[in-house]
Length: 111
Length: 117
Image (cartoon, each protein chain N blue to C red):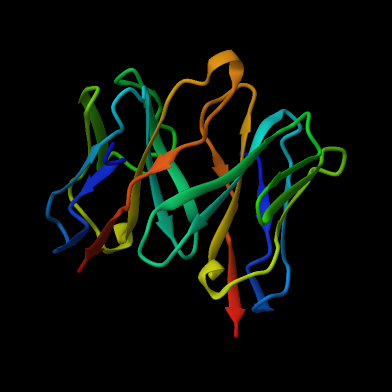
């Protein structure tokens, strides 16, 4: 199937901005998503962006989409220790209804 | 709404035993998905249903795995016989049909952690 790639780890200091990156290969992707998974929990939808947009902002979260390069990023402003979790990038193609996930980026926020 | 409800939260079983995982989707959601999560392979889609009908089961690893959705409010994933390599966290998720082509993403349950010894 099509690939969604993410870096595995990111460590930032509390109060700094975090940027989590994702690349995908399916050019027919219509929606791209960011999910958050805390230890022992399911995945929680954080935000999504439609492929005809290049930016979406929601409080501390900013999603940037470069459709030409098939690159998606999630920026978390003023990162807090409660933001420590695994963040998953996912895409859905125009032809299907199943989300294709990356392997997740573990974000560690240190005091 | 209570969200997507999975049971049990944890299951420990011996190799060769039958295991049944259960899921109650959000009322009104007509898509239901079963995913498996492991450290090595990440999140893998096993099967998904639309209006209780299986649409894509190409991710089901072997004939030992089977899934059913007898009605809109209940689904099961069964492994028979279970093997140690089936140890993973199994997630159920549900989604409504997007209107005008808009997709809402999924709502996930808390998962069932399966350990086969």
